[in-house]
Image (cartoon, rainbow, N blue to C red; front, side):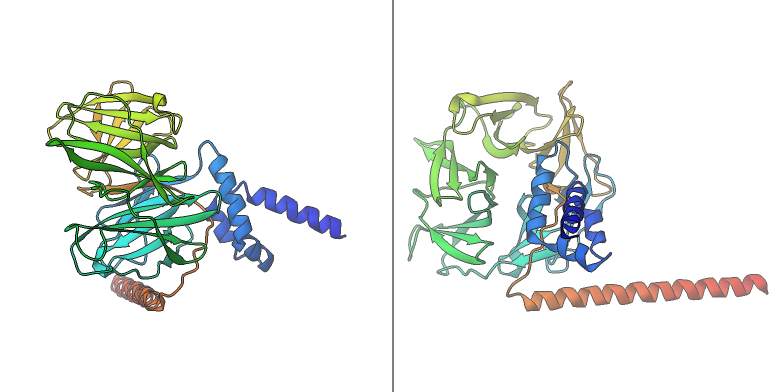
Length: 393
């Protein structure tokens, strides 16, 4: 009998692993055994591995316009505003996404950082981290997953603009597994990143470093390994030095580099990480207007005939890979669309810690919305009854 029960459970797990996250979340209400199985962190990890192994997993676009919203991939249809904890608390900047988790930063709430899962509607507020002094500083952030420790990490790089005071730079790393901060070695030399958010490839966060050499602006790619908490410089491809700026991104899980000048944008991909000879220029895109640069690639369309790109003018465009024609992507009636990410659906539950006040605010907002819906429904019923009485009379 026990063997039959074990076989039944194994078969059920095998079936559940092949289903998308959204229906599985609904199945949790069927019975207690299904609830505990689907809520299990081990099952969530197995389901995530199964999803990542698929050639076309169930994904959605997530973007700010200006409210954080999601839309169908790859049509940008069925736009839905996400009920994230920052919804009524100011602007939520998307630092990055990893395995369907979003890292959100709210500058209006004293630089509050959240990890948020739009699929399970759960989140974790990071412990508050203050600045060590009142001097002027600049920030660089990064969010990603470290395979060896199976841990999600957030990196905050704080650098002094004046170059004076108790420190010149401070690198702090947050671990989701321990829910705590540790200080990492300082940046080897002061760097300035135009795009303050690092991109994750091969367990390393990457930023473009802008600096001046012999009165000329130069660039390099700076990496920070999440496994060893150390910095390194990533060799860049060889190209002509006549360019305006560089941007790093991720394309097909490879590090990519967008090189912009006044006429063209070149998209390079590092096909084999750590091998400088594997840098390959994939596309050369003609600029339609001056100062309208390509920031970074977002993703290929499902048929791989188009490439979605983020512009520096807070717009998303599609590049036809046959004709190399760039077209605007219309996202409902939103004039601007930025912070665009691709998120897979998953079952990860982020148990919040140390943010009771934010929880209470969220619950109050939900109660207010329920009351408004209820009042709206009552008004509609009243209008219908009056209309029915008038018709009968």
